[in-house]
Image (cartoon, rainbow, N blue to C red; front, side, top):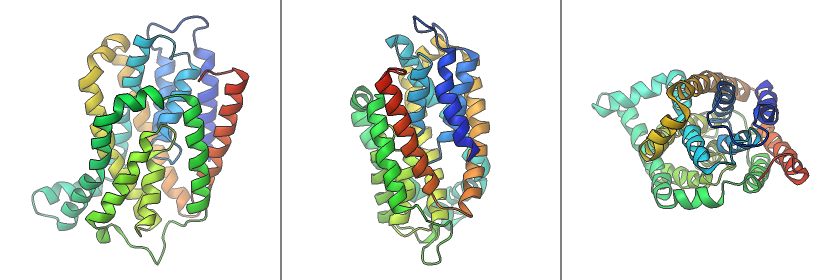
Length: 303
């Protein structure tokens, strides 16, 4: 897919914009656009947006100054607002169903909303308990490389030849609270950067019997809920510092670019899956892991 080629260009070409000796005091417009594109393109694909964003920001020299790095880390979460809006745009019918379900006007919508809340709870609890610990230990590129490689192998094994519609699978109407909880527990694994929230929730959907189509839809909708909570938490925790350091213009540019690129990525992925399985994403993850490992060993990028 052409999106993957653009991601590689953005990631490894981004080093051209880095300052040679010191971390930049402000994020440039170019850097904001690059990170917005990387976020939007990778957020809902099973390739790990967090891993890509860590790699991209490191390649552009954003990891040297601790204070600036904290603002960048907050920014990388906040620009997910663009990806959230993209899902609302593409899957507005499901959003409408759930809103009607809140006022008892759509039984299936209320049921879907309940299942999304159930699936969200495990990650919410683990995130509140271990966010600082995970950020301090697992946010290194070698950990990301390992996650990319293992996730790529898992995709090839479990869903390499999977088709969008399986006559033996079920749709979202047949999802149960227990099955939603299983998917939610698997989402916790994605707190390891590089694993990919989309990957584990799509595989989780298939494991509990959903068709690939409805596994993808549930993954997108669950991502919308999870990303919204993570964004709100980060804004409350360090949003003021980010705003002071980066400025409102940079933040809005990142959100806008993330929205447009996520909208294209979601539409492209669904269209692609109509004729193909998820195998291409597994191959991409493995190749990216090998290329990144090579660059780390050679010292082109730092862990």
